[in-house]
Image (cartoon, rainbow, N blue to C red):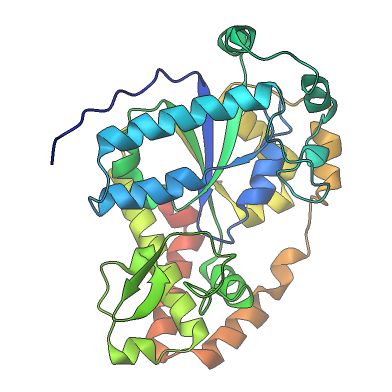
Length: 324
């Protein structure tokens, strides 16, 4: 087959912010709060990154093609945002324009002309594009090959909170069966799994595990993969580590830290937006011990011990990645 060399477009977006973390770690809340800061565009999902990076890892697509595709995707995304094309106007979605701190901006853009004038406006504007992603850090090596300039805000959550939330969302059984699961699914030994068990042997014993045990293994696996990549990073100027509990209990303080990291400030609507998201919330931590007890009764001893070990590391300044 003839080899083709792909040419990537020049990236129009100067300030890309990936709001990354494991599934159910609080990324949408984080994204909603961050997108209230000054010069932020509305929140977007980054599904294309979530699909292409594992595909690069499996060598099913080249980094050359992935970069070309993703650059076009980002440029088209910001072009369309500047004229409110394909914008989400659902009132209850956190990515919806009505939930954005200043929806009038996008209503005004509906009447704007398209064409080269839009490109000029993009190039002369100083905006941030916040993109919510799942498990980006576990594919950091592949992301780095794209040579995209970006910042990452990585959010963590207590491992037991994650497992419980995964179980309640049905993530121990829905892969390959539920059309509303949009994450990359793989098939091993005639059974469907999330892509991140690609390197795990699917034995008969594994298939017999209950939903909570599978969720526990998925969460432990992704935590360890993410931490491993974070430890290898030589330059961390583009990386900010946060925590779900800390964010919901200290929203103003943490948002000020994030604003400083991004070199921006609160908008005039930020404090009002924080209140609308019902923060601070000092009650959410209270249910943790009940969830741990529930999980302990449902999983094998060795799985629970592994969760305890990861929780201990998490409590040590978020896997020793940040000091509060």
